[in-house]
Length: 226
Image (spheres, rainbow, N blue to C red):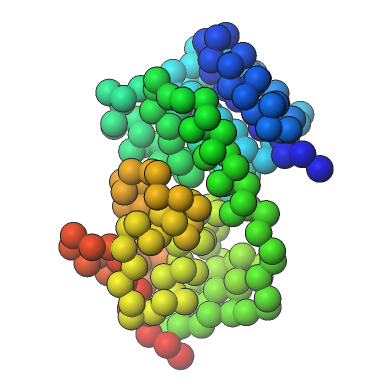
């Protein structure tokens, strides 16, 4: 079955062009012009991926993102931002966006990012496996995490980052390696990795210190094995 994509942008030309490129690749595409329409379309069509502009009438993209995350931790969100909106990009990633594309952008690049995201989302199920450390329990197959016995809800990218680092305990993973493994490509800015790591550390609480920054290189997981 074809994947469903929701494209949210208040510029008709952008909606039409992106819709045409995605439909050419066989995707089912719906569009919305405002934040309110975006939420209505999300509930009605349950898309696999949302392409979401930040600058929207009625309700901006960051507010839409916040509401989307309240309803689903699993939805994959690609933010559209202007090149000058670095602060908004960081805020968007902090709120739970999985990736971002800066305007003006190539429709082909956006299609490539959608395809990369779907490859990650649809890869074969992991064999039953659990990763256990002191106070941290990761059920890889069920994609669930417990910290000190309390379940912690992670976004798809946060979970994939945690598993990748935990599986390579003691190894330094470069940002490029993490981009390739988690996002399926090295196209994104390293800030995407850094912000997701920051979010992940906060959700892990005191155990977040196990994710160590190796300055100028990447990250290392130093979890204490049981």
